[in-house]
Image (cartoon, rainbow, N blue to C red; front, side):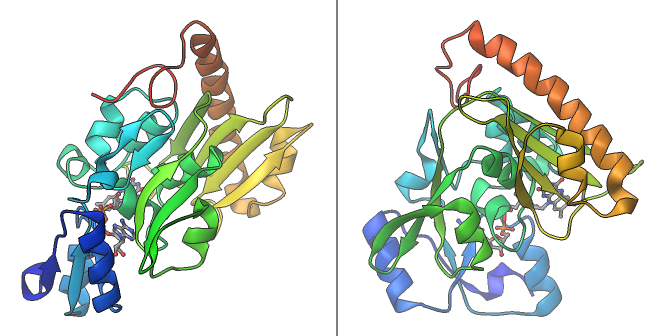
Length: 257
Ligand SMILES: Cc1cc2nc3c(=O)[nH]c(=O)nc-3n(C[C@H](O)[C@H](O)[C@H](O)COP(=O)(O)OP(=O)(O)OC[C@H]3O[C@@H](n4cnc5c(N)ncnc54)[C@H](O)[C@@H]3O)c2cc1C
């Protein structure tokens, strides 16, 4: 069973998408299908797939705003601090041409780019039958929502993303850490995933290692500590290059290709 046996609707405008959302409350949302097509093949689910990748706002790409239909290869090529390495780390080159920000941030995936956006304290712009609404990205994700993601918004800032994998690399990292510095201080906002049952956002102050490891199972301490050390190094490097440029790209040095 594939998406071919489902009804796939691809509205080209926000108004059309909104109307379909009202008419088909049981529809599922389709991004690039890198995971969903596998799931459909496995479960035999049939029904309506709502593909929002043609809705213009889902392609919006400017400093501080990233559409849900943006693909990982484009994000990886942007050089955006933290976001580009997170996108570049996903799957393989072919998959990255299809995998979208929307799919990566969905409750079913909560993947690497989602972690980077959590560290940026991003907001979700979601579509409801009454129109677009804004909510914290983490809250939207945790609600296991029926409202599709249209875009994410965030304040561009120096940031870092690091992951540690098995050798050879599997589909899921052992640990991934995304970091930004909290405004006006030495504290860090840290999103950690894979080493913990669900992605978490933590404020790290004082001893960042102790503060992070207190939330991580003991058998993942060594790997998480290594991941955080690499992320801290990367963050310092990003901060240096950030101060020497205007930060005019999507999220610092680099810009949408
Ligand atoms: C071999 C392999 C390796 C992978 N490696 C990684 C990895 O290293 N890191 C990582 O993070 N992920 C990885 N993934 C997971 C996944 O492929 C990616 O996270 C990808 O970004 C998902 O995006 P997509 O557009 O293909 O989602 P889809 O497959 O289209 O959808 C996935 C889920 O998201 C929902 N969804 C899609 N778009 C939206 C939207 N706009 N709003 C709300 N819900 C939506 C779908 O309903 C579905 O439940 C891997 C997958 C595979 C098969």
